[in-house]
Amino acid sequence: MRVSRSPAGDGVEVFAPAKVNLYLHVVGRRSDGYHLLDSLVVFVGVGDGLMIEAADDLTLRIDGPTAGGLTAEPDNIVLKAARALADRAGVAPRAAIRLTKRLPVAAGIGGGSADGAAALRGLCALWGIDPGDAELERLGLALGADVPVCLRGRPTQMSGIGEILAEAPPLPPVWMVLVNPRVAVPTPSVFKARHGDFSAPAPLAETPADTASLVRALAGRGNDLAAPAIAVAPVVGDVLTALADQSECLLSRMSGSGATCFGLFATAAAAAAAEASLTAQHPGWWIAAAPLVSRP
Image 1 (cartoon, rainbow, N blue to C red):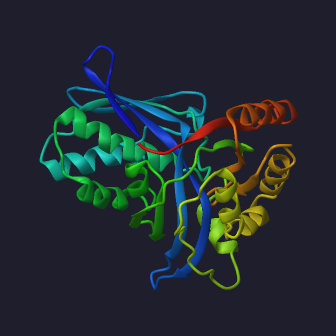
Image 2 (cartoon, one colour):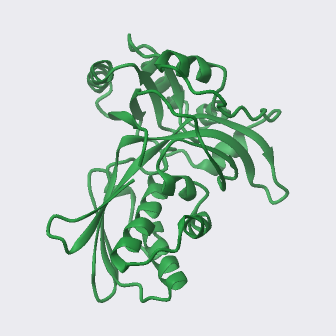
């Protein structure tokens, strides 16, 4: 997650990258109904953008190519993050926020969570406050299970319901092609459709020497929510097949609870070729090639 001063120097710009679950195991369920997860989470070089400026009150404006799925209502996660941070810091929630949506909504790549995390980081910079990472993650968890890992913005082993975070081993360079069929897949529906035993945790313990080693490690893991997501939205299966059919795709998998899927590629050229091919074949889908981001 990049936080920088705007070119004019009177505001803060934040890049909110897409979150991708390279694997996701459902390992249990708490008594309150929340599922326990084990996942290797990474971030890629495509995402939303926030521009945050000083103002007399708190406002939110949303634009961008995928803005149609959102409204600037009081329950928007960006506004909720701003009010929570202001309350924690004892300051007035004053900021004019512009959210440029580039990621599809309800897509399994943490778009909303990334936006909430970006708001927290950006407002800390604008208001000149520093609650510390632990407190920000506590505030983030109250907003959503994926917000704490999005605050980190780097490869992370995630467990619990999203609140237990550990550094992942260094990962080799790799490119991804993200594909969403522009079908929203509600997370509760996917979990409701999941049946069978829980999986064992399988955190990545060793550093992959290269892209091939990473692919081999991931091949022994999976996404336990893929089958139930396909049951809810069969087009997810079509997306996985379309990615796997690309000549240089090393691995295709669904991220989160869907519907976004990704393919791994060894080079930028291979990813760009797959992006072009998929766009020609499926012009109605949202498709983006981007590199894995190793550090925030």
